[in-house]
Amino acid sequence: MSLLCEVPDFKPLPKTNQSVGIDLGITDFAILSDGRKVDNQRFTTKMEQKLKREQRKLSRRYEQAKKDNRDVRECKNYQKQRMKVARLHERVAFQREDFLNKRSTELIRHYDPICIENLNAKGMLKNHKLAKAIRDVSWSMFIEKLMYKAKWYGRNIVKIDRFYPSSQLCYVCGHRDGKKSLEIREWTCPACHTPLDRDVNASRNILAEGLRLFETTQP
Image (cartoon, rainbow, N blue to C red; front, side, top):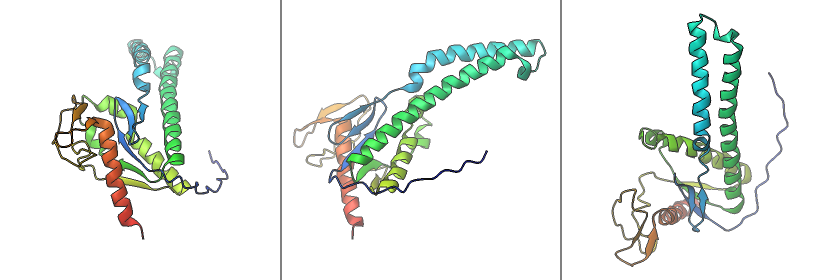
């Protein structure tokens, strides 16, 4: 199929003079440097039980067709069930796509520059305990949407090196307190005694480093 469409010219959005640092997570989808947290919708998890049930039905019908020595392409029950499973996967994909589009557009409209970590999502997927959750949040797709929308609307995206210790530094005094296990979500800076939320602290450090890098690129 060949499709021809007219794409409108995208005009740069007006300046907001508001910048933001974003720490992407799993418990919360995104944590912003202004303290706001975007809830993780967990689309796949919400549909998981239904998907498993319908997938098992599909497998049983496949095995029955093989047992009867029939071509699955000619088995109406198998094909009906296959389409049902496909529609469930499609629904999850559409829900995720809609969520990512709305969140990315909201950020593009309100902030410039937007500072994010240059995450190694493929490498993180090797962690089998977190792989399913990482796929569900779709960080790579979200960053991709931010990038092309920033290009459309004249915004700036600043990527922070993935090895920058955003969660180890106190955003107030800069004291580096070393690595902490994921179970530790809050602590008090031993240098300036500021109470710190792990994710908000990281997003504020990402913002500070992003603004520093952004300023070095300006004429």
